[in-house]
Length: 337
Picture (cartoon, rainbow, N blue to C red):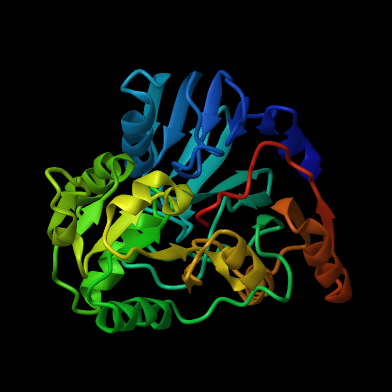
């Protein structure tokens, strides 16, 4: 069997013809296998969705309980047959519930990694490398300039800034699914035990994380009423990155704008966004992690879905690994990644 006969790119997303299912489809399909809950990979309106229990719960919170006609829980490490094709979900280390999808038929194994990272994350299971014939990878940070620092060092920068500017409120811009909860949990692990305040858009997903076993400590809504602006002096307020430059941010005392994202490696991008405290904290693999992962899983060929495809394809060629870009459309670079 040729790889393209088992899994191939279509306008709707990666399609498995023998099993009649799509992986992370960008439009409604009859059967979708979903790697994780971010909106560019998990969409509503499918006839049936198979994903981990955590991803299904995230989709229900985001889209409502009727987000799909039917749902099926994928247990990590358990192989099931979907239309005669063997399918196994393995941890991807991206966000809570994220998974790689391993597709096998007639001795051919393809791993669709979805989004992934190799750095430790206290809110989700670590990436599990799966040797394969074809490895399908993202390349969000697929340039040598992107080398993420130690995540603990970035959280230490935030804690040091809190001590240095005790009168101000630190507004930490973080994507609402995954990044926000990771920042909060890492602050707790670093010894920060004060109440952390949440923008309204963060509350439901943080409560879901807690219900799924990720302890986040004392949380409260970031509401300023009755002229009590000073109550937020020295506080951490977690909000969407887009809010740190809006009127909403000016309700807090001497706000210190911060953003947790791999894109904060680009100083000009941080400056243009008005970020005073850039925190280089990404939920995607950096250049070294991308190349090390490919070397570890030892594929005969690499397919690159989205991001900086050309550089990674070139690295594969120099490493004598066949590779090609898939130019998948609809998987956007999230501002908070």
